[in-house]
Image (cartoon, rainbow, N blue to C red; front, side, top):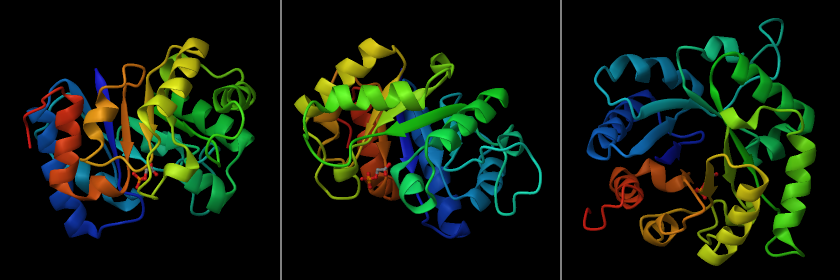
Length: 241
Ligand code: PGA
């Protein structure tokens, strides 16, 4: 089973989200071997869940954020407990959260624990800031060992997103991704996605990388045909446009 996650980030109004959400949910039926996961902005989660009545077991909603704390006096935050029944997955540690909201080790630990307690699968993002500085895989593993210590990773997904590849139009090469992915997989055998400038054009070569289990797609997930093409490649359907 492979995973294709649409991270819409802070884009789309309600009408746009409903239209694109319905269409992307339809892709789950077209590509039953792919888990199609859509992560809209928080206010669109419930309207989307209600609007999309008929969908395959392989369509899921994800939240882009969650609080590390239990419900209580935390203005503006959303508890894992509140997301229960609304989403099946939640992004954790995305580089934009780390950068703009200073989410770091303790916050990430707390978020993962809260999500697991609520029965939601964390998608834990990590990646190096600069390309190819020293032994990237070893540096990343040291970071993961430290940041994810004592967490039940069996119930998580990992997403390798080199920061220099996010939103730059310059994805990591398959060789570069494989080197990291193989090291991570031998560290912990959990599903591992790649993210960073995934497009319809590079989806085929990414889908051919055996050590990754899917992709986390930002910009390209806002365009139905492009996202469809990526899902098709991960479903192994080479001829589908
Ligand atoms: P991108 O974003 O596909 O636009 O590079 C990926 C991400 O931030 O998850």
